[in-house]
Image (tube, rainbow, N blue to C red; front, top):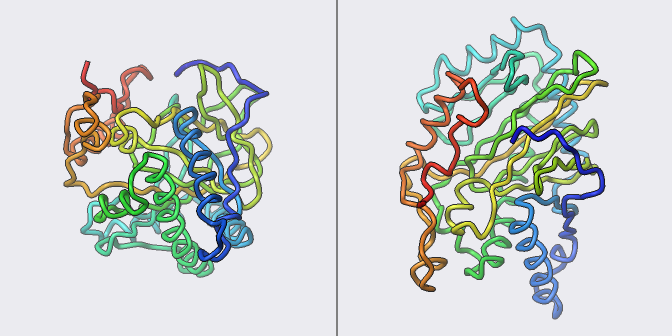
Length: 328
C-alpha cells in the first residue's frame, strides 16, 4: 500500500448507461443490458472500480451539491463545529452524523459532513445555508434509485437474479457524506485519505474537477480522471466477501491538490449492522467451490474499523481490513 508509483497511461473503465434509459419494451433492450452487465462484471473483477455516465442524475445537481458544500467548508471552524454539536446532541442512532474534522496527520487530512439516511438518524445542517439541505435531499432521492439500478446490474454480472442483491440486503443502510480535502501545503505529495478499502457493499462517489482520487492497480496508482456528471463506483469489502473474491474491494486513496481544496460526496450501501456476512452459497457450496471467508457479524467488523479511526496504528500495515476473516 505504500507504493507511490503512478501509472499515467492506465484508465479506470468508463461505462455508458444511456442505452438502458430507453423504454424497457424495446426489442433490443435485453441485448444492450447484457453488454453493459458484461462490462461491469469485467471492471469489478479486474479493477474493483468503474465510472458511469448517463446514469440519470442531472450533472447540474451533482455540481450544485459540490459547490454548495464548498461554501459550508469555507466557514470558520467554530461555526462548523456547531453543526456537529447539534447533530450529535440528539442522535440516538449511533450514526456519527454532523460535522467531523480529521486533523492533518500521517494518515488522513480532511473534513466531512455526514448525513444518516436511517430513520433514527438526527441530521443537522447549517441554519444560514438552507440550500445545502435542499440540494442534498434532492440528490439522495436520485442516489437511492441509482444504487438499486447498479446493484441490479452487478447481480446479473454474478449470474444471479437481477433483484438478488437488493432483496438479499433488504435492510441495508445508505450512508451519505460530503467531504473536503485541504489544499496541499507544500510541493511534496500530501495524502488526504490514506490507502484503504471501503467496508461497504458498494460506494458511489461524485467528484469535482480538481482530481487526486486514485486506485491501486497492479502495484501502481491510477488517477480516476474527473468526468463532469459521472459517478465513480467501487466494490466494497462486503461484496468482495459475498462474491467469494470474484470481485475485488480495491485499495484507493486521495492525494490533496496543490491548487485548491477538493470537494466530493460519497454514498455507501452498507449491510444492517446485525447481518451475518459470509460468501454467498450460490457462489460457493452450490457450485462445489470452497468459501474464502469465515462468517462474521458486520457490526463486529465495523467496530474494529472504528477503533482504527480513534486510535490509529503506527504502521499502515496494521490497519484492520477484510483479510482478518479470510480462510488461510
